[in-house]
Length: 279
Image 1 (tube, helix red, strand yellow):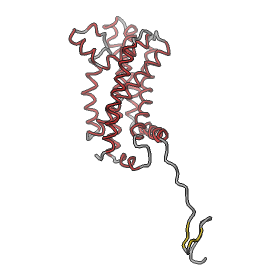
Image 2: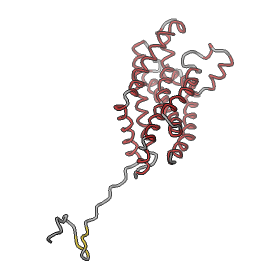
Image 3: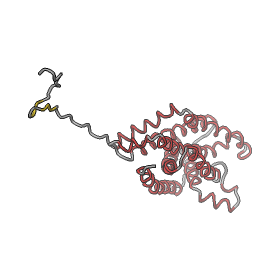
Image 4: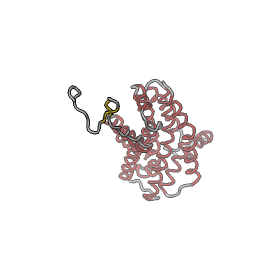
């Protein structure tokens, strides 16, 4: 027919009107697929924010070297002796400090209105949050490998063998995963990334330094031992130290797992509730 241009194959006429063939609508991605895709996006952001890579690689190495050689001789007689006690603790401290970037990255995305687009997509709604966590857990793993690799070079000897080291890293990652939900809530409630960082220093510095990461609890005054004993980071460092050296007390591992489950049970639903609201 003249004047009607090209007609696509399969098109039919119904009562004088051109009807195009039905196109099958693609199915929505699964929860796992959406989460993994957004997790990969979290890793790609390191290309645009290189200082995050610094904190995953250089910061763990620097902290391990500084504490080993500055305090090793005074606290344990030699750096080689001190690294046996320090390394599991410095692993905990390093990963704990990196968790704050979960909240910072989320805050930046919300400020750019990117999460408004995510909320409008036909995907599993928690996927942007879960995906961010999955990407960050991989970053935590890289930091852990950096610390352990340097520790082995400095003379760290894990009596628990490779299995003990892997279990210790897994336990630290589980706790870090739970803590990241806290920073997600903070990242969605404060106005700027700087506010997230400021709040993290106020919370993380007391938690990591008022613990048994650097020195044994028995060297502290009685009143301070009580405070340190209530610190969840103390239980995590003790459990990681025990797993690496092959003398773990299951009560510490159980305590860490129970605390992690409790944190997720409280802050994961809270994070989803805040996420669904317009900021």
